[in-house]
Length: 113
Image: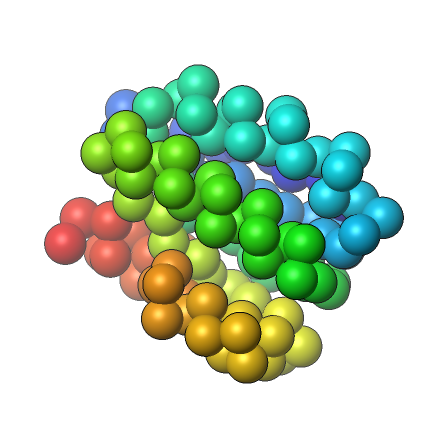
């Protein structure tokens, strides 16, 4: 699991998640991921197009990061989930808490709303 941060503008970042976000990887990325999101002070769109698997620990990480961003007045929107990841998000009702859209353009529109 790895993540890359791409600055979109002075108010938002795109965070690209690659690999598997599960019990074997969450521990290694949790602190740097949360610190990166918190330090930016910006809203974020999370690019899930290269995320192959998402476990309950991964969901906890996403929720935790979203709380950090929300406390700083920002928003988090997920986009591009592969079918297996989208099914997990829907089954856990995470899509009710964090918006999940198909494209980056839709995600940026949600941030602007």
